[in-house]
Length: 184
Picture 1: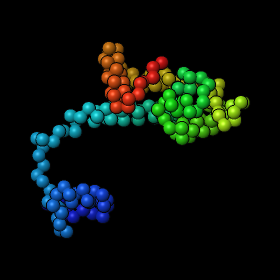
Picture 2 (picture 1 turned 135 degrees about the vertical axis):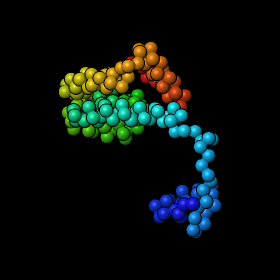
Picture 3 (picture 1 turned 180 degrees about the horizontal axis):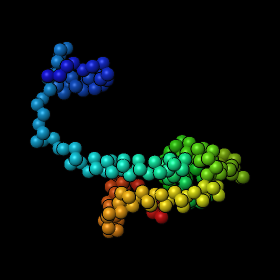
Picture 4 (picture 1 turned 120 degrees about the horizontal axis):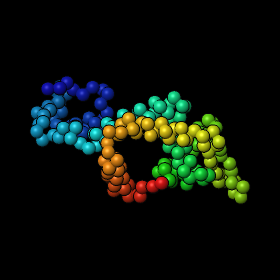
């Protein structure tokens, strides 16, 4: 028997608990755990994807932090390196981000002198962005750091296994989002 829910349980959760089990002012009667019918956490692919992703991302974030760049900023820098001069809304669309999110990232990158922003000469409502020479020089260095990070986590896999893993993840992404995956 458990004690009554404490004040930190939200009203929404409390109402769900009430509908799922018998709730009295004194105790909550919980069903006996049935470990045979509840799948183990480790049996879920999503668990392992998140687990690996968290470790890969955290390691890369630490490497980038030493250079004063976030993972999100790195992604924008890398995409601008590929695209060249472009409009923020096109960059946002290519990256699957909102205009607001890309705008904030661009602001930070302009402040760091990695990106230049200029109004369109024909229509001042529009802007163009591109890497500065400093940003242009930084991207290959950061790309090598990304490659090293990948090698630390996935270097033990054969090229065929890495390609198969990437293909599977792309397939899942396309099925869930309905969007095609950009390729370089």
